[in-house]
Image (cartoon, rainbow, N blue to C red; front, side, top):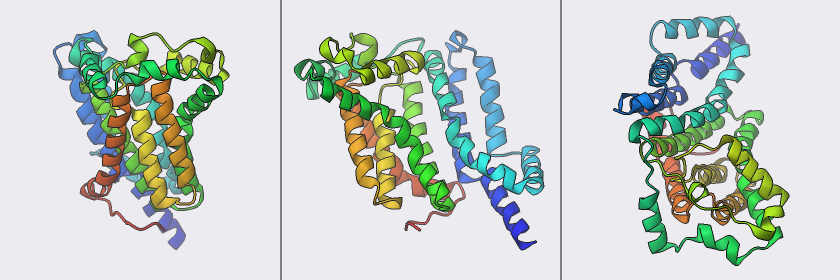
Length: 309
């Protein structure tokens, strides 16, 4: 009976009004404000507004959702815990797909590359156009494109490791930090959209274009990139967030994550996917997310433990 009661309590904590879901609800509110802008008619604003309002009510949650979650948690405590632990992260790609629609509603299809390009030229000198031209070495290109593709492993491997090690509290805090990093970047993409060099300039060509990983990277971006989602680079920012969290929770694996993040950031610029300004801003925002996470977690009703377990 004690085990059953503990299962019910743990499941309720996982699905009813916990900091992760409250953070999601806040993001749904802030991003959903885009549907109130004058150019909302450029997208399916009514459908998006309904979805965002529903998410807020579901995830905060408000009655009758709270009572419904309580009932489900009592009925199937163990069956529900795992999916509700992972759903907040697994649906991130769905949020990514709406970014291009939301930023068009806000700015009527205008992008702010001219602002970032002015900074880029003044500080960095356009490495997103020059690096591959200066170093057209196929093995180097393949290594850097592999680093760029490692983004997907960087997102999921640390949470998976913590979860299957049974460190559920560390998992939830690491997940919260990761989601905070995503949401901070996504709000930039909605309200200050920047296309990035991939949309404005031709891709680096020549010898490096024969590379398998070069071609794979470009196919993936053609299939699933979201226009206006360049500044700050969420690839760099999220990877920096994950690296810093690995130092805290999985220090033995942290050096591998740091190397992967360095290759990813360099590959993002070398491949012409991001301005160097995007990468630097992502580094800053990803670091900010790590330092903000404990305070925001506690503001949303959680209890943050600073030491690794």
